[in-house]
Image (tube, rainbow, N blue to C red):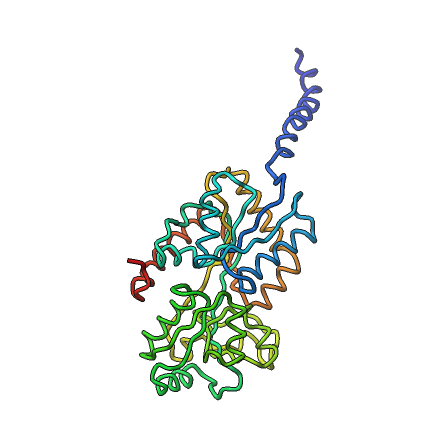
Length: 333
């Protein structure tokens, strides 16, 4: 074939190739039935609130061709939800929002489960912990509160979500750092924990910001410090203060830091295309005004990870939690 004729044919050949390739992109995996969004915790807590927000954003903005339903499976400190995922091999119509009970529950209960039994998708954010007291108490700093707790001889109550999980780990770290003892009182979810502190059934909590912000707005609770290396960056005024006004616990003389995962996992045995679909979905969720508002109101650390970076972070946290649990004496024998 003469070169001139071949040259004239090249644009047509290129268009044909593109047409042949296009269906491959269109054929990328997407859900074909309702996606079950599992929350391995009770209603009203941080994980539940985040999952329901995501469901609402996906539905409102039509980000997915099928529906999404949130299902709470918090039995056994979240073991119910995690074992469901473990036993749903290859089911890409199930996702789970994870928190640090993904590490603590197997260690505390002996349940045969590991984060390696699921497929990591993405870290959506890291959740802060704040030391809260009832606003009617006189305590303005951590040291004032710990002095009162020490004087009470171990009779003050620290409320938290679950036993031998994040809240009790932080309580154990506080006890070690201060020499103060608390009576730890476990509840089913962070929403209930905040209500119990308002009702003075406990003396303090280490709730996440999103779990206590309503009570702070209502001037019912007072934050004393945040368990992070730096102050939260948010400046919106809440009860005449902002999240950024809350000092770190280290500033208040308490050298304790703890952040909690808010991430997404899938069942084992799913494909790379299926995992990529949910990574993309969560990126779309994070780009919405609703998500950004939620992040600011809940004072989240907005770190995002996926792929090998996320897997590496999870593996490191698994090791760290084992050490923390061992030190606190929380590992099942």
